[in-house]
Every structure is written in structure tokens, then in C-alpha cells.
Length: 251
Image 1 (spheres, rainbow, N blue to C red):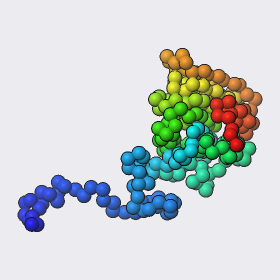
Image 2: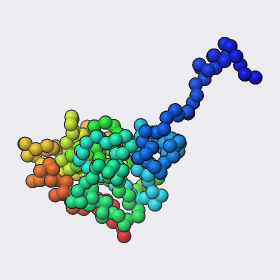
Image 3: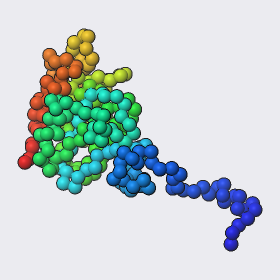
Image 4: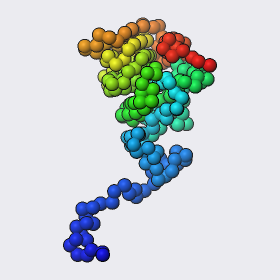
């Protein structure tokens, strides 16, 4: 029986509609493979929605994961922090990120994802969700984080924000941030290697060190003769070789 009067007013005001959407997702046109009715890509149990979260979809055969974060190219849009999903963002074919993608392209057990950093928490949240998914699937697999400039600051921050996630190797190229650089390495990172330049008139020039109480991480700083903008290209082979020590390339 339909209620009227006071009770109808009461239920209409204290029992709001739950799970009802009144507009189409504003990012729908940019992701045509998703339904406009889908929330969190229809993964509300094992995925989280951070205002357009764009985490890496971990392949079933993935045993190892490499996350590369390039230098700052401007603020990414919500849900488009991966370079492959933004046509306005790219990286040089001589960069460390391209070298990693190219080198591991035929290795089915290793997945490489390239992000670009943001001044908000978008990129950090997306990478954090990605590595958490990866560790849930492959707890004993190898995880490597590498970044240049603001991207280097990002990977250190992400590693520190996930102290329960083991990072097998952290590689940074001339860390530079808009505020305070992330330079302290926590004990969940087994090994960290930082390449930097110390030109007084250039960006970067930052060294890394173990965080207070961290006596287990192996931390190394390498002073280079590169500039802040060329170190990404100049040391791409060094970065690749460091990654290969942890994750040998399988054809």
C-alpha cells in the first residue's frame, strides 16, 4: 500500500536513492571500450575509484612489473596518467622509458607501464593501486620503479607510501620536484640507485639516502656530467642494465 502524509515525507527524505547516477561519466568519450554505466570498470570488489583511477591492468601471465615515470610534461587529466592513453604526451625514443618498453616487449612474463607525474595525487594513487594489484597476483615477482626528474620524485614517494610492498630496485635520474624532493629511502626498498648532476645553474642535483632507522637498503649515488634534461637519454643504457640485473629479459 502506498504511504501518504507524514510517513511518505519521512521515507522520501531519509531513504535517499543509493547508487543512482544522474549524468554520464565525463570521461566516457575518452574510454569507448567502457560502458557509460560502468563504475570503476565494473570492478567494485578488487578495484578502487580515485576520481578516474587509471591503474595498470595486470596481465595474468605477468610475473614481474616495471613502472617508469618520465619527467614533468604538464598536469595529466583525471584517469589519463599513463602515457599511452594521452595523445598529447610522449617520450623520446632515446629516453630510458622507451628503452625499457622496447627491450621487454617480447618478454611475456614482464610488464612495463609508463606514467607521467602530476602535481596532484593522481599519478601516485594510480601507481600505488597498480603495484598493490601486482603484489596480490605475484607476491614473489620482481618490482622495479624508475623515474626521471619529477618522475624520480614520484617513484620514491610511491615506494615510501607503500611500506608493506617490497620494491626490488628503485632507480632515479636527477630527482627534481616543485617543492621538497623525496630523497629518503625506506626499508621496503631492497636497493636504490640514483644518478644525478650537480651543476649549480641546473635543476636536480639531489642525492638520496636511507631513511632514519633503515639499515637494510643498499643505496648508491652516482654523480654524472650530464645536464638535467639530457640525463634521461644519456643514462638509458645504465638504467636498462640495472633493471636487467633484477629482471633478466626472456625471449
